[in-house]
Length: 463
Ligand code: LFR
Image (cartoon, rainbow, N blue to C red):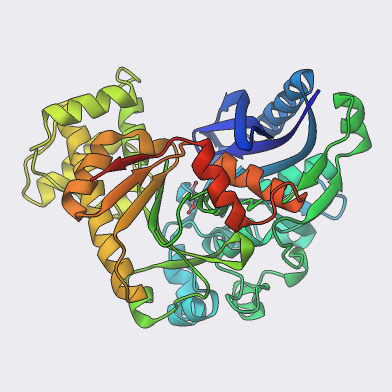
């Protein structure tokens, strides 16, 4: 049977188990299992159904063994969210979703205890109300007693890895997104944890990506009829995605629920300018820094689509947007009001009304307003990146599912004057599998992986 590596890639709206292997010097992907993911309401909070997700992972592994011999597996998911376990490894908290309103107003409360500037200087991480730092502060406020029993802090992929192996680990790339890790020490910051009154013993020294967590548990071995080694890719999906950007020296946009736009650096930039533009310095694999900005991304159109009862597909929204491409209203996509509104269409309309712009009503108008606003923000962000890194970039490389949106690609090429490359669409899973291949020696380095990606996947160009 063909040997393979399994990438489990779970985003805010769906998850996949993908088999990857080399054939004729090309990386082949085979999507074994897809499953939905969404936030659910429980006890007044938005949560992820983590047990459902783990079950779907198991289904995917089971299915993969019918066709392949999986050698290793790696898990990546979105960042910042976590669970706490007690000393007997029982889960004490739900996996509360980062868009839950428990963090409203929390940043300001934390800044009263530790200055904003200190947090940025130490961590280099952007200020987002949903960062783990503010989620922990919210948890501490709502249920302080939970910390008396808590023994382990695990982020979502760490917890899924625990279920697979029984091992406790805090993977480094994802840990950086907590805003609790020192940018230079790469370890948990006492000062910040103390200001939250959260005990440091909950956290284990961050584990580098590419490390092995060993084999799956004996129970799972029996269930799958085979043993599989669990490897840490960049368990933060964006870390895996950026590892799969095909070219060097380019601005990238990892385009999905979020648009993550930035460049790869050797060292963090924590200047006052970077702070004021709210750029982040997340830890990457291969000792790189993901210097980027979170842009609200396709979340807005995903919500709009739901609110119109899934009547239009994403491709239809693109067609409808072309028909209304001159619709003039632009919203600030990064405004906090779009993070978790009860109704996205009404929120966009309210923004336009309050800023004296025409109010989008028809689907094409709403879609054009969202897409044009994203492009406007991409262009501003590109300028900020050039200013902060003190160099010019001639290309923007768009990866991920959102790279299929040619309205965005064409308008971005037109407005930025830069050459836009797009693809691969499965960048996150590719980065995840590449990490496993580098860890097992099947690919010699991440540098070599760039040419593997270039010859394996289609890349399009917009000028
Ligand atoms: C993308 C992503 C972003 C992170 C956001 C919240 O899926 O991981 O990088 O800022 O989700 O976790």
